[in-house]
Amino acid sequence: MNIDANTEIYGVIGYPVRHSLSPVFQNAGFRHLGINAVYLAFEIPPKELKTAILGLKGAGVKGLNVTIPHKEAVLELCDWISEEVKEIGAVNTLKFSERIEGYNTDWIGFLRAVEEVESIKGKKVLLLGAGGSSKAIAYSLHREKVKVYIWNRTKEKAEKLAEKYGFIVIDRPEDVLEEVDMIVNTTSVGLKDDDPPLFDYSLLKPEHTVMDIIYKETLLVREAKKKGCRLVSGLSMLVHQGARSFEIWTGCKAPVKVMKRALGIKD
Ligand code: ATR
Image (cartoon, rainbow, N blue to C red; front, side, top):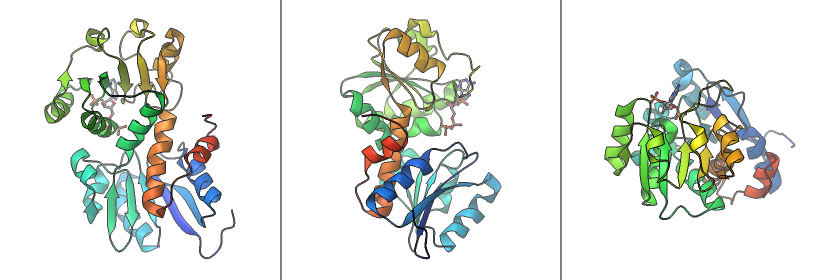
């Protein structure tokens, strides 16, 4: 990449962010299309969020992805938010023009990743978790009119989402395993190798489709593989949400295959 005085800057803000794979595939996208731009990772502690956003905008940065823990906090810094952000309550994409525009592309990233593997229509889904990531996925599932059972460690949060979208709150994931077609983990459980399972994974069946939005091989994913379950990749969701952000910023169709290849994902 030839960086010169006209190179445009994009990036991701998070805390921590050094593990992020977004720079790898976003830069591959820019390179492939010959766009004179770079995509960097900015590690911004929560107390610096406002200063950082205004500073980056002031310095001419064109757009940012927003990740943990800033997705909800950036809302109040936006001058304009999309209809989806109004519904979901979280922003994962900022576009800087005269104003600060907030978008959410997680919900479509989820849907595209799932639809690569199978149609979600008519499915029964067990949604684990009710945090920031879950909100975008819940919106997606609601749009697709699928039947959703939701479980969360803190039941009140599950109840809020359930009330909003007509989901059914459950006390134990085990109670609906016989009935559901798909299991989606949106909790952070599995991120650490010694995390205990969220439920008895030996009850998984080959008929289940399993998705863990954590994009490493978690215990859930390992057990699902052993059982012969169909898997939806969390890494694929990462690429698809980023690809949509890329399109919002550049107006160009994102080279999804190239982006995936940059992360070693085979089609
Ligand atoms: P994100 O933006 O990644 O979704 P978050 O909003 O902090 O992050 O949500 C984290 C999710 O993981 C929540 O559903 C959380 O459950 P609580 O609402 O009860 O906090 C879940 N989670 C985190 N640690 C957990 C644990 N040890 N056991 C079960 N669920 C856990």
